[in-house]
Structure formats: C-alpha cells, structure tokens
Length: 431
Ligand SMILES: [Zn+2]
Image (cartoon, rainbow, N blue to C red; front, side, top):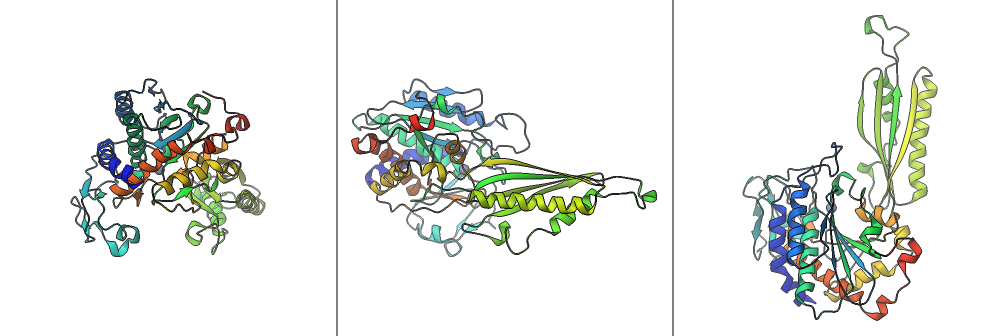
C-alpha cells in the first residue's frame, strides 16, 4: 500500500542520512574481525536506537553484529538482514549527502566535484524517477546506500511496527552484519542463536527486484616454484616462475569465460592477482558460474593449464588449491519456494510488480542459505553502488521499507503461517 510507504518516507530518509555519515569502510587486507573497528561506530548507534524503540534483547556482539527481536503474534520467525560496512572501492569517510527534492529531470551536479554529474540521458533508471527526492554524494565519496539503505529500511519498518501495535505481524529477528564487502559477512553469524526460520537480506537495488539466484563461487590459487640463480651465471639453470605464470595466463580462453566477454547466465574464470619473483609466483583466480557442474569445469580447466605448464618445465613445481567461497542460493531456496514468494506477495501489496534476475555475484544470503537459513534478497532502491555516482530515491527506499512491513504481515496470515516447517528440515534449531 502506497500510504504505508509515504508514512515511512521521512523516517527512512532521516535514518539513512544519519547512517551514511558514519564511516564503516571494511578492509580486504585486515586480519581482524570485524576487519575495521569503526564498523562498531554504526553498530553502537543502531544498538541505541533499537533500545529506544523498546526492544529489550538488543545485542551488539563481540564480532560487531547487532541483533534484536521484534515480538510478534502468529507465524514463523522472520529474519531481516543488512550489512553495515561499505566497499573500499571509494572513500566512505566524511560522506556529505545531498537531497535533491522533487527532482525535475535536469543534470544533478555533485557539489564537491563539479565534473561529476548524474544525467538522466546516461541513466535510464534515474530518468524514470522525475519527481522523486534523490539522494546523492558530494562527488568525492561513495554514498553507502549499499547497504545503509537496507539498514535504514529495516529500522524504519521496525519502528513503524512498534508504533502500530494494532498491526498483526509475525515475530521478527533483526540482524545487522559487518564485512559483507570483503566476503566475510557471515563468518561468525550464529544461525541457531539468530533463531529465524528463514530470512531476507535487504541488499538489492532496483525497486521490485527480488533475487533468489546468485553465482556459485570459488577461488583458485596456482603457486609456481621456479629456481632463482644469479642472472650472470644462470644459463641452463634458472627457472623463472614469473615467465611460467605469464605462459599460463596466455593460455586462458580469449573470447569466452572471462568477465569482460560474458553476461547473463554465463560464468567465467578471472585472474585477479599475480604476485611473484623469479623464484616463486602466485596466481589468484576467481571462478564463477550459476551451474555447479560448469563451475567445476572452470576449476578443471585451471588445473589442466597448471598441469601443462608443469609438464613442459619439469624443474618447476606447480600446485593448485581451490577454495569454495559461496554457492548459488537457488538450489536451497527452491526447497521452500514460499519464502521467496512471500517477498513477491509483499511487494505486490505495495503496488509493485516483482521480478527476478540472477545476481552475477554473491550475497550474505548465498552463504546463509547454504548453511540452512533460506535467505533471498530484496531491493533497497539504491543505485550505482561502490561509486561516487551512487544515488538513491527516497520514494523507492520507502517502498522497500513498506515491503518489509507487508512481509511481516503476510507471514502472520494463516495461509502463509501454516507452511512446512523449515526449521525441522534444515536442522536449524528454534531460538
Ligand atoms: Zn551490499
């Protein structure tokens, strides 16, 4: 219902502007958890705000997660998850958001860097939002709608339900996570303690899009040991690991199986880091596909290339390690399609026409679904993530928050609540 969205609009915007000003950039190279201590700054704010709402089991954990319960009536316990950290791709320090109210469709110049301009002509999703209130950066940082839009929408929806005790809804568990952007978002996430029957991440983009399918992903590391000898006296002796690594890269498919040559449902192999010396080199690849068998083929191809190089230069030692990163959530979500269908139903009740598109990436939900907590992903209304041109529509964010409210209501309705018990089948225990 559009009226819930308009009621939520102001609160969601205020929360969003408050949260994006708190620097929560995560750090790929850190070995601590969370990867940066400053993520707790937002965690503490959210902990305080949840307590102010009167929720009494609010918890900021040692790992930086924020958990809380919104008691409800009938129905399964529904998890709502968003991540507090932002990407390292652009600075997240000193974010100065601007709000362009009732945008008229003209160019939006970002005040901190006038060379950065959002133009309707270059941006069809923006072009369709004339009349909306548009939040942008000042052109020098990212905005952090990924995923503070999701955080603000969950907070707004929870505040709305607390303020409207007459609304019947299912019990909710709120979970704000850290380090999603560095792929470690749910490393310490205790599904049993969380106690939800299933969950939703609020971490998508365009309004109406509900995701139930992600890549399956692995990282492949190929390590090459050569032999370093003084170059003045190395004839017939030196085995240069860098050159062997380069040969291997040369043999990768050229017109296929790379990020730069594929889209849609086709997967890829992608070398993303090459370090080394004459004596030893390491090549790191990511392999991605929606289909587990094809992901296996990508891994096998890398093994074969490594074997070929090793066979041609028997003095070198070549080793391959493969580490699974996350799995396509669809195989798990298909075991209980009503979890995703309920999100569709909630979006429809907000006047939207929900749609799907496979994500060429992963979410915290990919890992949670594989570990037994089915977790599809819901739109947030943010756009052009990880960029100084990131922006979000206030009306779209409100629609996302309203979808959460409707979702909480859907799951309290007898025809939805009397679903097969996910807990019993997945082995997760009740809270
Ligand atoms: Zn995100």
